[in-house]
Image (cartoon, rainbow, N blue to C red; front, top):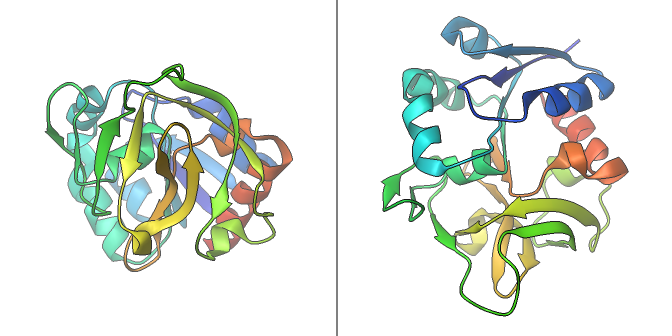
Length: 202
């Protein structure tokens, strides 16, 4: 069985992600141990909360994350986890991210739409990737976020519209680091299929 490590840095909805991955047939470990992270077949960077706090907390495993990514093995960032993968965020003052994917995290512009963007929204697949194999274009997934990712076309796998078009899923230049702004573990059968695809990639 594939061994997947969910990085525990003190911020994240770890149990529901763990359950989803176990349902997808993986052995799942929640850990911040550098050796366990480096030896995993796949790694999940979860996240709920504020960008600045998350970056402070993840600092202790930052070099481990860089080493893991350099190995070419797959890593999936979920929600705030995707935002942390970017170069910078303007949440709470300009803060540097992990810079695994070039781009920035911005607050939704003022409009009649409620912020946070919360609930189900349809996605537009802009590039094929193994994570989204068998996922129909226009599928609905579950979002909860006040900030969105702005990145170039080559790093955008899925876009979504909420007052402005934003990157709902991103990828690094080598294809092994993927982020989703939505929560696959809360997105029903569609999200479960994505988690199964991630396990298959590992």
